[in-house]
Image 1 (cartoon, rainbow, N blue to C red):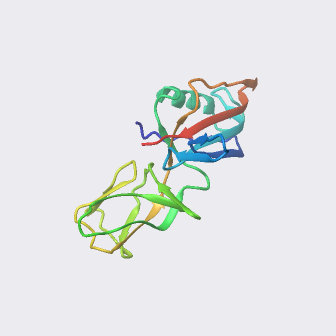
Image 2: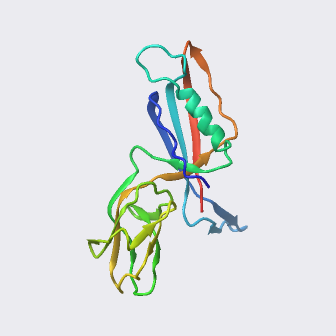
Image 3: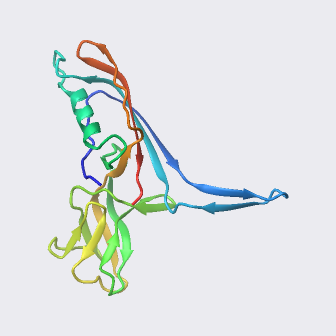
Length: 203
């Protein structure tokens, strides 16, 4: 697993599709009664980004050069769909005073989470070290560590019934959907209508 961060490109069209995906096994009896088994505890997300254009190293004018080379280099660095990486979404990327656990005086390891209405799920992509709080008091960075997968480890177990919260940025841990990517040049120095498809990975 890598901790490369997917680069930003100037030609993004702002068109984005995020699709939550579950895995449910359904059995239907002759009477029509269904038995459903939820096989995943958390969903996987499919993410698609569309770029109106990407530049290359020959692009003229005021545009930044070399997008297409950076995209190809990144795609090859992770081996297509082989290795995962981190994607910073433009809207879902930050929490403030987000609860992630209750101390019991014994546990020292906790998983960061993020909340949606009615729903909470693990955060598995961390780059910038977040702020960690016990009962609203920030913990000194020497007393707690956070790994790239959102696992928080305290040197001393938080007290029983203490509220654990965090503030900071998070990333989606994803991989490319396919082992190939189609890049089309339509004008001198410009490559257009490029779609990037990714999906989140489970740990």
